Length: 201
Length: 132
Image (cartoon, rainbow over all chains, first blue to last red; front, side, top):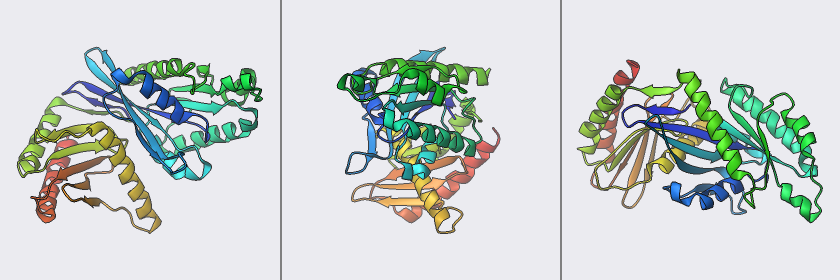
């Protein structure tokens, strides 16, 4: 649920990076944090375990400038990807406006991507929200690993596995190198803002 | 999903209640957030410089976690939370299913006195909010 403050003319938009564990959700945020430092007023908040895995969420607030006189404040969140943390994943999804699904393009992660997407579907249902209606962007992360001889799923297969029914915009990406991180972010912000505008009009 | 919109008039009335009942009392900073971590309004005494946006995200997560724990022990909810520090304290109180009132205060206010005022504030805010 985006929150609109008519007095101070601020719109707060919540975007969640979702996906299987070790898929690169936090890396996406870290790249954004270091690349767009100027637009980010506060520090990135990370709640993680001693082993550097996300425990609860990462949080990165981000000023996008103005639309029709309203300040748009984008709030980026990640969920913990590990299977056992579904209760906390669900909490982070509360009031979400837009989702980036970060899939791991490594061949051996194929099944985990599908499971994670199915669980996203269920988790959204518990908030009476539908994966088919919410603004969503697919990101097929880690494509750079191919250079190192690690087997990568072709985009056509990922599309068939994850996006054949959803038919949402998708990007091949490498979060660690920053390839298409900004493109993914721009796409999800524009879809989300358009969807909020539509609901308000 | 419903979109949270409050009118300028409602916000001004809520701000007035917060200033009048809590800031004047000596509370450093008061924030009203929704359970998704959005800030509805924030008021401070002009001196405190908290990063309220990060604070709201963490507070919503914190409250949601405690809420889930309440369910695990068979409670409907823990409607109130209090964190005590050396110099500053944080008090969380649920306004309704969607809203949370957070007060940050120093050593010079007693918890009991704050709680009495918070109850009063919440009652008044509910009245404003229900007229949405």
